[in-house]
Image (tube, rainbow, N blue to C red):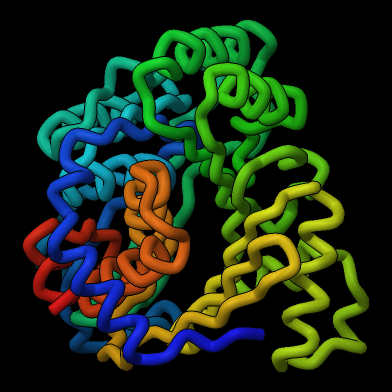
Length: 338
């Protein structure tokens, strides 16, 4: 495994500062599960007399975009254009999500409404920086044939203008095996790269033929199908896991993110470890979405994978210092780069 040295990271940051304007207006097609995040923030002053649980006196209620919508939002905040395609219910949460997307610079025109399922919504009850509880409203099931055909048509109408395609899988049912394979083939037919953010419960065969797959370390160990009892979290086992994923998907490029330990970039037989800088972490929610948006903006624009990963590390480092699913703005990225 090749370890990137601090001098190389410094050079990559310098290149990014000088060439960040080349990412302006890049269009990235983001397809996958979308959702609405709701935050209820308040104070805990007492324990409930009904059960040994804290009573949160709510002082603030806030909505934010979630799941693949957050990836598209990060593309926009970093200077690109996020073309979002996904599925919502015919409900109030869908209306709130559409309004929120518009106010954050992402078009809601390509969201498909399906009255047979609710819009995925996650309600987080907070007290300061602490999560008290999370309540999920969702229904995990594959799309109807009609909805899948409609979604595929939306992608087909947008793929030519996009610089690349992100498939964001949260295991809610939007990306079936047949649809995922159809979208990968469609993108390649138009000469576009495909990056997949996988879900740990989805079989790897769904992602065959993608140009790059980006699991985190825990997802990678599960997806590899290797006997976890025999694998310890060290360099050799991570290499074994990465090669297993590459072999099963025939995907040459693979990124395994490891939080504060950086990322491992697999390019064919070559593996590079790219460190990240120490950050004060308040909340990792949405950090993977930010990483993916930043990496793809750079990679689809022709930047080298290592340079793209350095940019993605910097962007993700910004958002872990915030509470909740919050995008990284371009000026924040510039500050993080130097």
